[in-house]
Length: 102
Image 1 (cartoon, rainbow, N blue to C red):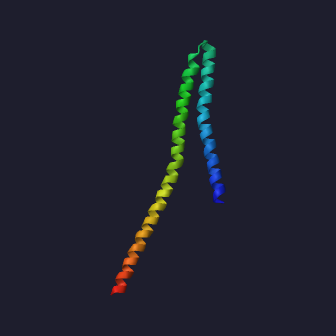
Image 2 (tube, rainbow, N blue to C red; image 1 turned 180 degrees about the vertical axis):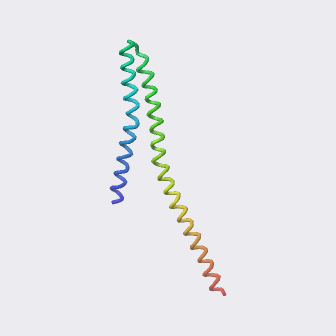
Image 3 (cartoon, rainbow, N blue to C red; image 1 turned 120 degrees about the vertical axis):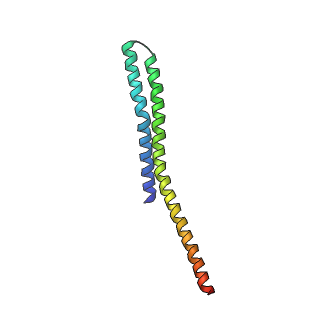
């Protein structure tokens, strides 16, 4: 069951990254093409495609960071819990040792 959940999560992440990166490229490319066609130039397409690439990488960075921040927080919480349990076990061991010496 956990394996299926991980596959679904990876698929969703892949689709979100794909859509997030392609959307600015397609929109900026289409707008540049239309402006070039209207004003009979070639600069608009190139300029807007560069803007689209920059926007795509910015969106990719923010999306991936969001995915991993949540996982990192969960992992850090689990590690902190395990450390607390370890300290509690050591404290009890010391108390039991102290009680047995008395």
